[in-house]
Amino acid sequence: MLQGQGAWLFKAGLSDASVWGVLAWLAFGKLLFGLIWEGVASSGPVRVHRIFRISPDPGQRGREILSSIHVFSDAIALFLLINFQLIRLAPSSVATTLTTFGVFYIWVEVLYYFTHRWMHEYDFLYKLHRSHHLSRVVTPLSSISMSWIEKCVFYTGGWLSFMAAISWFMPVSLSGIAAYYGFHFVISLHGHSNVETSRLGAVLAGRFSMGSATSHALHHARFKVNYGFSCMLLDKLFGTYSADTAPLQQRAINGRGVESFGEIRQLQAQADPQAGGPPVGSLSS
Image (cartoon, rainbow, N blue to C red; front, side, top):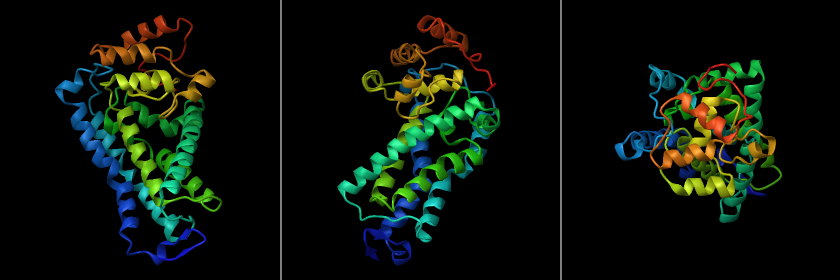
């Protein structure tokens, strides 16, 4: 393996198992976690804590599978970046792992909030995002169901091209990239699980403005709220946080999720009588 000035070049380390291990993790990690999450979320004890006690639309599962075959794009993109030496990878250590994870986390939160919001505010961008919102009641599979352009440009491209660019100015490690993707897999799948089983989630949401399965479930129901990924700080700062998130989260934890989209309207009216937005469950932008 060739190392110089913190560089870590792929062509000199084709036989390095850690490279292929991370590429395999990016390619198959979310699928593996997704299968586990799907089984857990559909089990009896967990289903009691569903946020929306509403069945997914007929044909949703098959449509989501067909809209998820780009799940390998992150692994392919990272392979190309390393192979063509477009990214400098520093030796992995605790310091470079934490630094890489922290920068990656902040970048994704900011990028995700604004691109996600723009996709709902501009019709030409919403056309790229609409397929994801065909799932009004989400399942873990919904987390990887989206258009090719949304996945490959806004997520894979937007995330890894930034990390490649900053790798020439600060240490970026393969372990840090792998760690962030692991975090993303867990948060994304939980956010689309439609269940709230732990009071810890309510504490994290209330005290630290963390995102939750409830915040994203409401986004799918009401569209123009709760744009954030794992953190709701930008939603609260820019006035797009849904005031009925906490009451609905508590209901799900207590096993009293809503039975219809009409109940969601009632919760919204109780929490914020001035709230507007499109009809709950509609497919308009």
